Length: 235
Image: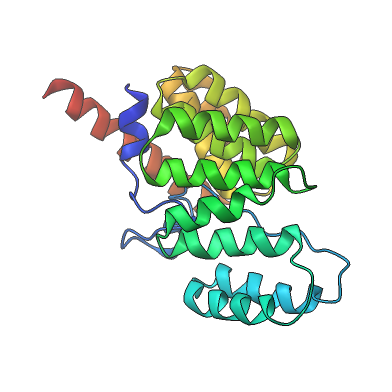
């Protein structure tokens, strides 16, 4: 199996996470081999509630509204905290304004959110299919915050595009242990194991799922990926 093809089987607009393929909502929730947008950590400033509302808008896909609120916030006299710049970068990236997003994420250097800045830059590189740069940026994010499961997931996704299944599986195993309740990370781990050739372990993880519907949906997804890869390999 070719790792790059595995990644490309999923939607191309993956940078902000989540995509639907017309299947059931349960299965759609599993189609998640994606670059994840991390939430902006809360701060203790007076604008925490306001920035929290903006964070919610970004999660809802309302980046233009979020950016308008951020513009208003920047004129309010409040100090522009690292959280503000992270939210601004996320909103700009969601709007496809990559150059402006890069400037915002660069503002996070030498701040407590420096790792998030690297992750943001990695998502920009991934949006441009520059996987070598994305891999290095995500690696810097993990170095700055090694217990962030989203950073590990994103690094693994970049590794898959660079035909590095072994390291991708390692990162995803760590991410899964840090966030065992994440379907997205669990699905990505199973795909990485399949690509790595560790079918026994992948099957063991699927068999261990208690929810029968979840288990069967995941099996169907894996079968579909394998069938597609086999067909491409013969063409």
